[in-house]
Amino acid sequence: MTKYNAQALEEQFKTAASMRIRKKERGNKKYANDAGYWEGGRCNWGGSHNLKEDCRTIAQGFSKINDLKNTKKELESCTSKQEYDVTKSRLIRQAQEIENSLQARTGASSSMFGICIIWADYAEFLDSKLRPLRNEVKRLKEGISKTDYKYIKELKLLKLEQKQIEARMKENKQKAANEKDSTKKAILLQLIEDDGQKLKENLEKQKAIPASNLRFEPDKYVSDLIEAMKKAIENNRHLRMPPAGHKKNSNNNNETISDNDSNSESSSDDESSSRKTKERKETSSNWWQENQQLIIISGIALLVIFYLYSQPEEPQTNSHG
Image 1: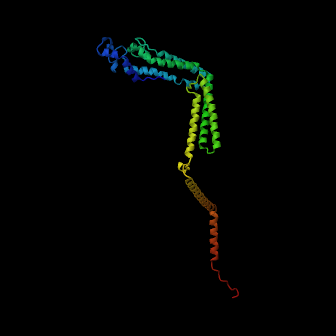
Image 2 (image 1 turned 30 degrees about the vertical axis):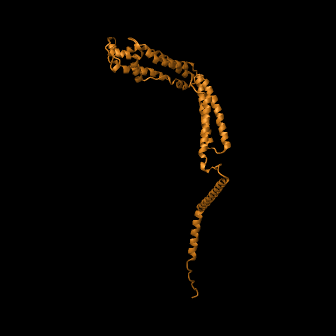
Image 3 (image 1 turned 45 degrees about the vertical axis):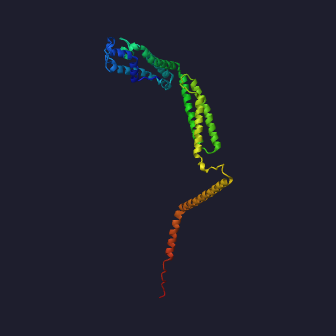
């Protein structure tokens, strides 16, 4: 969408009217009523115009075209044919009004956006700014006219399906990146390829619909997407691989390789021994936790028995005197 801002317009118009400005500065009475128009003041042509204000007015008038940017979204948001037809008619009328306003007409009784009649002498300059905008509005208006509710409805369904396919591909990419089993990983990669074909067919259908605004080639889009996913999966695999120093060097002699193998076996034995020691400690710890209460109760019972046996016997009394 072509855009213009007030400051750029002011500079461009001053360049276009440079000859007039110089003549006015030299005292040419023909342009006496320009007064302070070029220096930030007011003109004396009847409307007390100001160049900066006029440029802002024109830029704001051009910005009305931005209102048509959301025409596609407005039409897609319609939930019934009746609502769609009413919205479509309003947008076409709006586009026509904007197109009519983008005409380089200035004069005592009529001027584009109410700007100073000075601009009337620079219709060619104005038209150079208006022409691309008129073309854009015309294109938008034709696009709105060609749309049909059935296309909008079909497009909605295809876009929903597109989101589902892309979400599935992303999920399988994540699974494949974390999968260590080569067979399972191959299956996931094939699923991504299959969904890629479905996505391509979906986008081709979308592009064939008049209401669609797809500007890219579905085939290239899908192939690039799959290639990016495969690279992401491969990069994730490399991140999980052991450091390069753990690899055997094929350029070393047999003795070096043998030493490496011996060191590797020794390291493996150490790891196995460490693992077994750890397992014994864990088993011992678990046994103590599970039998802690029983051990405490048994200890208390032993203390009671010891106490009873340690008490002195009382002397027996002779009942016969």
